[in-house]
Structure formats: C-alpha cells, structure tokens
Length: 122
Image (cartoon, rainbow, N blue to C red; front, top):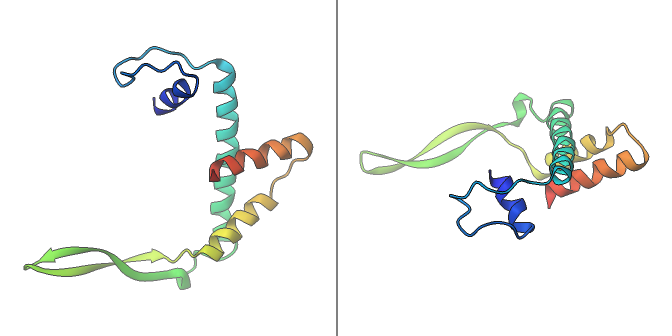
C-alpha cells in the first residue's frame, strides 16, 4: 500500500485522502521496473549477509556485551546488557564489496544490477 501511495504521489494522481481512497492502479511498466530493481537489491543483500559469514564476521570474537536500554528496578535505573554481534563499519564495507565483486553478469545486465544496488543506498 505504501508503495502504491508513493508512486501515485510521484505521478500526481494521489488523492489527498489517500488513506481512505483505494483507487489508482500502478502502471504495469512501473510495477515491472520496481519488481526488477527490488529483486536485484535482494540478491545484493543476501550476498552481503553471506559475505559476513565468509569473512568470519560472525565468529565468537565478534560477540560483545553491551547495554540495550535502561530499565527501572526498585526505582533505580539499571542497564540491561545483551549479547550482540559487533558489526563495525569496516566489516559492513567489506561485506558490501564482497557482494558486489560476486556479481556474475556483464554488459547491460551488470549495469542494471549496480544501478539497482545503488538505489538501495539512496
């Protein structure tokens, strides 16, 4: 629904009461283009997550204890500590790069893939 509202707004066909007005159909061409881009983005994201595993970002050394939030206990604030993977910016960029380097296509297909991925970051 949010996608329909956004596209109809961009096409200047959205009613002011869009939350109550179900009219408007997204043109097939735009739906197909959007689905194509989303499919490429999902491929990149899956590659990115696998890259964390391949590069050892998810081993026991990456787990840290850190506070999640403060909670009230007997009227005194207490930090609740949880265990998380310590993803840092370097690891994220390494996973992005690894996912990009694994793209197995050429020419226009490669260009479409990269443009779709870049749209994810926009």
